[in-house]
Length: 181
Image (cartoon, rainbow, N blue to C red; front, side):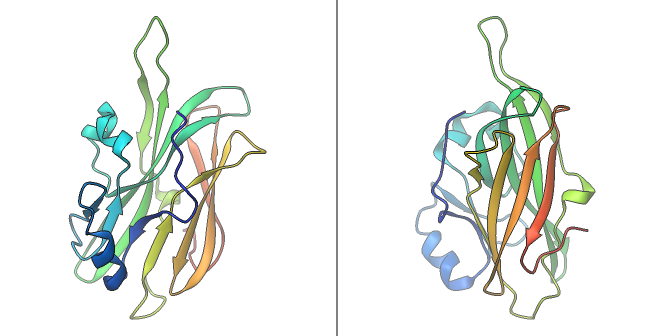
């Protein structure tokens, strides 16, 4: 619930030179299944978590407790999933919301899904367009909010996410070259 990564920690990389450097640590960075020239980062704690052992994500952008406006404490996991075909790929952010364990019950996955409005298509910016995602950061002034920084074609941007009372995560591209569909 309290895991945190530094804001400059790369959690997804498409640049060939950077992928080569990150791939030196295969215990943390793994090649993306459909695009082995890209890598995603998995924190050590994620691999020990039951949800992480059966996840289809290609990386983890955020893993930390958040609290909805109605006071619901949840472990929020924002995953990275890459899919597509031929030379076209789409990077999707997935949401997994876990009700924490209590003395009387084990942890329970309240919700896990990819929502169409969450998908961000990072293609079409240039032939050399490369995406880099940074570790999501909890907002210290709003317990429901988190941000995920990114770079596309060297231009920076930010994605905002909010835990909702219905155990969904609202996601919106705040700025930069990416667009929410």
